[in-house]
Image (cartoon, rainbow, N blue to C red; front, side, top):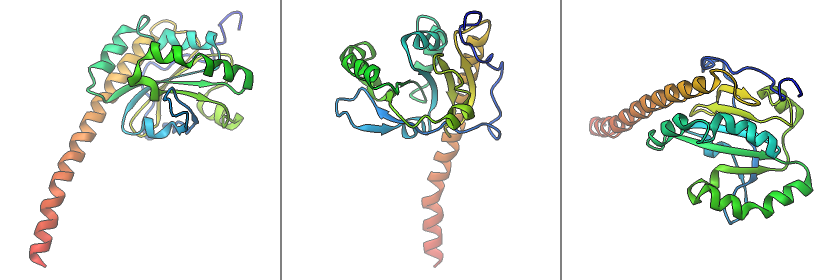
Length: 209
């Protein structure tokens, strides 16, 4: 912690291969939405490129912000804004301490104003369900450190960073996000073509019958 600020690993310069990448686990937590209902993270991630910040304290949140906050990585935010809704920023605040979780809830009105209504559903306060097995599986090795993940549309972890951003890690995140957005555009286009063909094929089959 003293020498490396808890940094667990260096981010890879390139994306993890899709066929070998691990799935990001589903967490359940309260979002900033005013209904106060617990919601799953997986539906938010599906069919989107997601930059996910995971933290358990203000110190860890600031570490994750060195990768993903607009003031620290404006190029990443330009990529997200220019993706046509294909990419998004998501924050997961894991707080298993009841008192600290209560304090976060008290400050939720401030978070709502800061983040804007369009982002309320992409901030999660997670109280439980983060087992040691899950932490080991996704490299969430130090609860006091912030982590940053890049997920593809299948909820697979294609890139990961820990602690404060160093060297060219920020650039690696931006490159990876751009590539995954382009891949998702291709997939959506292919799916659209297939969906267009299906009614024609069904109509032809019905005529033959």
